[in-house]
Structures are given as C-alpha cells and as structure tokens.
Length: 241
Image (cartoon, rainbow, N blue to C red; front, top):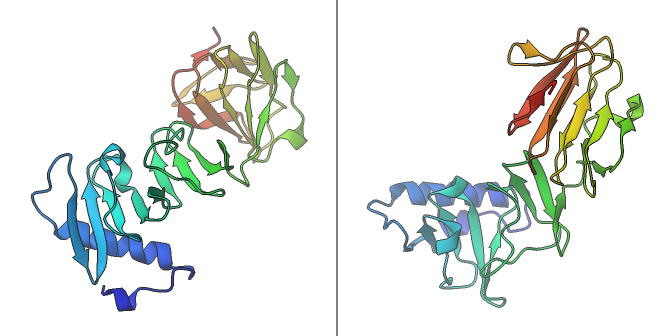
C-alpha cells in the first residue's frame, strides 16, 4: 500500500492497516540477517526488520516503522525527537516488565499483553499494571470469598509473609475468578465442602485445594452446575498437598 493510501494516524483503523502493510512488506524480504536491520521503503514509508527487540538499534527517520521476526512480530515506531522507539498498543511480550529501558519509550496508557500472566497490562507512567477493565486485588490473610468478589476479577498474595488461602463460594454456574502468585508464599485456592476443582480430567477431593508458591503462576476457574473447572493455568499447581 502506498503512503498516500494510508489512513490518518488518528483514525480507528490506522494501527491495524499499518500493521498489515508492514507485515506484507516484511514477508517480501528474503535472506534477512539473523540479528541486523533490514532497511527499506514501501510506498514511501521507511521501515526495518530485526529479529529481536534488543536489536532495534537507532531509527533512521522519525516515523520509521520496525517489526521483529521473532518475539511475536511486535511493531515499533521511531520517535526522532525523543530518540526512542515507541511500542505499538497490543504488542505481546513473554513478561511485561519490558519495554522499559534503553531504546524503548512507553506512553501512559500504553497497552501490552503479558504472556506469562495471560493478562493485558497498561503503562501507568511509572510501572506496568493490570489494564483498565482487569481488576487485580491483593490480600495477605486468609479470605472467605463472597459472590460479589467474582465476575472475572484476579486476586493475588502481594505482601503476604506466609501461606494464605482463598476459600471459594459454593459452585454456581457462570461464576469466574482468577489467582496470581506475586510473592513467593503459597497461595491456596480451596473448594467448598461439597465441591471439587477439576483440570484435564482430574480433580481435587471434595473440599480440596490447589496451591503454588511460584511467582507469576496463575490460574482461572469457572463454576459449572457440577463443580469448579480450571479454564486457564500457568505453571505447576499442587493438588491436595
């Protein structure tokens, strides 16, 4: 697509159109060096390809676009005035503690997807937090949950000095809740006396539990008419032990 046909930068489809166009150019380039830039122009837009974010280097002109061939094909735009690359909204990272330093420049409200936590994160201006619309709630002592605490929220153990337990309510079809370990103390998720927690064809005992103390391990559970079912899990969780 020539530059003259690109939508205005403020239009709703600008990012998706540029992403699609850049990937089209990328696919036409052969024999890319493993860790070096491949520069070119397409329709008057300067762009480059690198294998990893660490290889972005310095942009050639303000507004230059760059994409990675590894690490989820993330997209970046060069800000010549700030002399930094700005990540596009929606980039994917194995763990959203970056882009933070060096050649990266985040903008307040920047969105990125954290593959480790399975969450969309938002740059607050000083740190990455759960994106607006994703509620993350911290507790340090045992919690007996109530129905109003569900609805897709995530809970963690930030600041806990010892093991803590989240006691689930009795199953009720449609309830959903997630848990993330943020401090290296056991976070236990316990079913009600008449319920089990199921995953991949196996379950806890009635009133059983799952737990882990590995930072960034996370799990999401949904209730059916019969029991609690794990619908998303990251890392190893112990069952009834």
